[in-house]
Amino acid sequence: MKVILTAGGTGGHIYPAMAVAEELRHQNPDINILWVTTCRSNEADIAKRYGIDMLSLEVEGIQRRFSLQPVRAVVKLLRSMIYMNAFLKKNKVQAVIAFGGYVCAPVLFAARHNKIPYYIQEQNTVAGIVNKFFFKGAERVFLGMPLVGSAIISGTPTRKKSDYGNYVFPQEVKTGRRTVLICGGSQGAASMNKVLIKAVRWLSENGYQIVWQTGDAGEEEIKSEFAGDENVTVRAFLEDLYPYYSIAEILIGRSGAGTISEAKIFSLPAILIPLPWSAENHQWHNAGYAQDNGSAVRVEQNGETSDRVIEIIKSGRLKKLPPETGRNAAEIIVDILHNDANFALSSGRRQRN
Image (cartoon, rainbow, N blue to C red; front, top):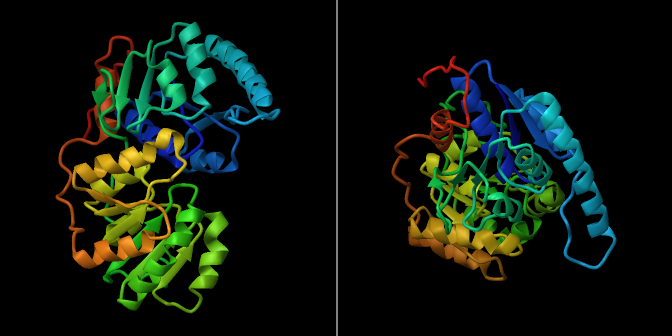
């Protein structure tokens, strides 16, 4: 069976797609999966890491300002729609699963035009513009968090965790210490980095070890700010956050759905600082949902952010969460797909261990 997964733009869309790809291949060793995404170089690296075939489309989001960019973006979108329409016909694709990002638009358009069943996984409390447009007509919509309308709340797909006892950390990172992990999502968060400097100084002075994923834009500034501080380890990007989740006591980060879901599977309490300019303020709503469920505290990004972070940690409000029970969201989604008449996977399905 040929299945297309489409996702792009940020790790919040991409990594749930990779989790579902892994579960599909686990249950169906003979399945043929193609990931349709953008032309960014880091997405090629992700495809290589996960051993998944990739098709790149030259598309870009439409900026809401007066310039020639929206015209260029529409031309690229139309070209990609024409290309994907022909591609789906020629390659006899049997199903499409979309996880968000503007790259999904031409793929979902072609699937709808060719009457190929398509499925949507929306991670956030506020649906992305492409997903929202194609909800009508989808065979199933899987939600990471509650959203207005009728759909299946599956949770956001994440990779399964392992035992990281033998993981080789950088020499300066010591296991067994009280550790705070700071990460601004898959692309870093330069503005968040700046408002956390005072809090990180306090953490270091109070004996915490800080592992800080800054993103490329903030790495040199933060390294310079904390030069000589042996309690602070700075990296532009950590290829795999899971081992660091496993040794952390507290997570400080943005409030993308993936970050919230990954923290929960490690029972890791979080201080969430929503991206102020996220689309339709979805990160603010995501963080509110996590706070209401007791897994995080939401803190606004402003000049008082560090003081709030220090106050929350001093208060002892952040407690280790109870272990996650039940099935992973990727398993839930794939099991439902197997029982969907329009997603007729091969009879060689392998049972989950």
